[in-house]
Image (tube, rainbow, N blue to C red; front, side, top):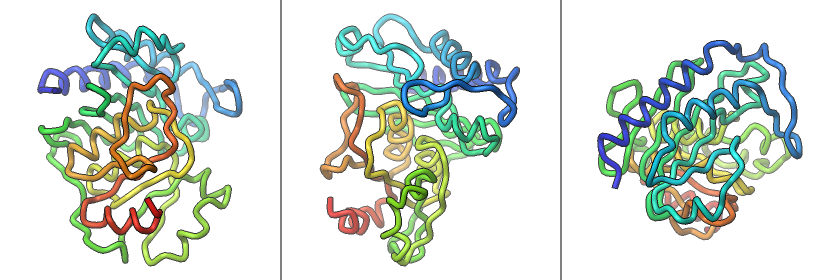
Length: 258
């Protein structure tokens, strides 16, 4: 299980990521496109290198959006770092302050520790299951909301644009459109929002750090099968997920028919 040394390593990795980002300016950076329409910048690669230097070592596997996946080697490890150097690269390129560095730690298939850093807002959310979560060094936890009515749910801006949230806008809760899966999860863990979900596939590196934080903060994280999600699988793509404060988790499950 993760301990204070894991938290310290995550904090150190986020420090190195922040240093690697210093030469770059969000909203004023060139990008290329990977397969599909996913943007890639020099900043993504610089942060990936910094995280690798801070985290990679004997005894742990590695899964990053910006590193070719050595599947067999990764699966040989029970402990794996799962990172996204910049989650929300579209927002980073556009200068929208809804992107973050995401560092997750997985043990025996479960996300157990994580760190999320939004350099623009100055939010650093770090924690581990059994050890709690801090926001900029101050202990936080998931919200105490007990009714979906009036709850704040964070939605994917791109999913809303595609019409995938149309049915939810008829429900009696507030919806805020945002970028970055990891950042949304971090805000739920910090009690700054009450739930977030996606019903379309996401990669493990989008979810692992934030899932660990939500769980560490006392929240609920489920896959679309209604079971806790597993990480470090041969195919690191998830069908979707739900994260919520415990007081509304059952309401969300019923709403989504999980």
